[in-house]
Image (cartoon, rainbow, N blue to C red; front, top):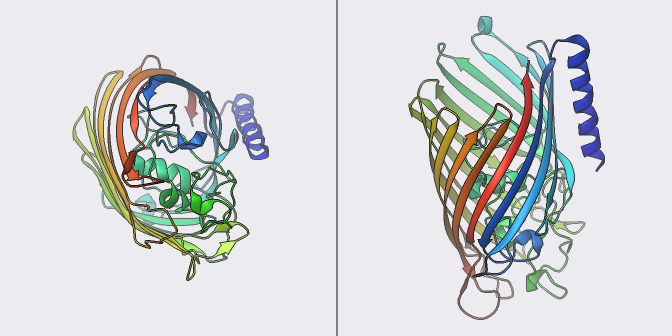
Length: 422
């Protein structure tokens, strides 16, 4: 709770500075979200089950769930050269929600220079931060303006991928509408990233993990006492914490943009985990490539998609887990005035390469589609509805056959956002 309290105090300080001087020193956002859902799905992974949606009770049995969430964001700027950003969240869910109630999502400081008479931009950012990859989470507080439920790809980024380190990038302004950007990052603190993908699989939600938060792992025999990985902390996995192995990871990306058309980007991430056990947590060796595109074929239309492929492994030399993974989505969104409608198709899966005779198979195949309608009733208030239909097939925990960890859900939500930018 201490990081969340610090975030609240910082937001109040920034807000007070605005009122005292009349000059906004940056930006301030307060998000309050309430949602109610009805559907049929297995018990959620957040509540001790295997279901991949944020809610779940019993398959083939309609049930309801509700959640409330508050997020605070504050950004302090000193001219055009310095900025500091803080993002915290608090969340409660009726159907059970493991992990911390509140915590820090992002916290970074940034210095910027403008070479070539302002035509280019050089930026150095340090702290806990999202890499600039998502073409879905493009609204303040790493939220999506398109749907209530994120793609499987960005759900995983929100859960397990949040480097703690430095990000440097340089953007060349070709003219007023076109530019090229190259960036590189050196980071730590993401050594456990991969544990959820290998042992649980993909999920669909919008839950952003916080610094030091422990997330539940499924009740697998290999994680139980006497199992292959019994030394893994049974409380779960902590993907965003201090570095385990002392080996820095790295990331690099290249982006091209044209304002009236869109952008393309390619990214590579490698956390360079040493695959060994450190105080009850394995350092997973996780690397992936990510390609992204965003197009604006018309004033009212947005087409966006991302494709990710990677691998994650731990154990030297045994016991070990070794998994290939992939995910991708394509969304099409149309906006007319205050109304936005969006359709999205997801496909994702994992492939087990280690074939441990005493371990569970990690092979998984899944797809999902989402239809959402969002209405911006006032500048601060938005309401919307969404339907999610997901199919996630994975090897049965006992005996032959497969199980379906997906499900269906109809969700209605309200978001009240107070925000200002200076």
